[in-house]
Image (cartoon, rainbow, N blue to C red; front, side, top):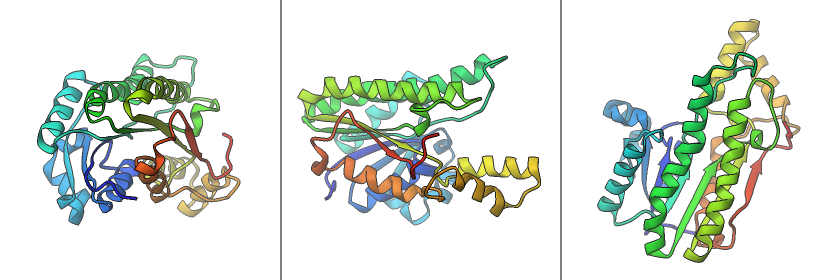
Length: 257
């Protein structure tokens, strides 16, 4: 299984699951270009990528802006000869109760998690159509299937992502383009660590105690690792997965939340 002659775009690729996927695809010889707002800081990119910087390229990308997306994709296609793979991993998460729910939180979730993916898909599909080959993977969430109190914006944006993916799958089927999603449960990323730190500050519990509570929410009593998401993504963007489309793959450790 190799994608050595392919070019991949990964949004949100300088942290968490996006970064793990970028590193995994680069090992297969894929030319990987990650886009993130933080990529405007060259020193930050160098610090994050370290020795992988020679295999992974990075550039500033704001998926909330059509102009930013269009310019980013055009530059990648011009530099590397096309775009074969897209992984939408950019996302935001902030809790709020529906009563007195701020418009700003709602708008940011929809604009980043859902509309941002729509913008990148819309822009890369013509390149994939010309090549007669394309792979699109959207990072959704188990929250797309089940409601969570105080998470209306997040759940709605991720559920919308599943619907978007089904439409892309149908439109891309005759073009050699597949579209699938990965829906993880709690993954041990920097984002989860922020939640854990907030709980430590609120409850006075230790890091080990709070981490164990998050793990217990999964029947397997463990947190999913970014590398597990990356391994699945690597398969889903390969030639071996040509018949897999319109599917949502839940890496849920048995959880139903």
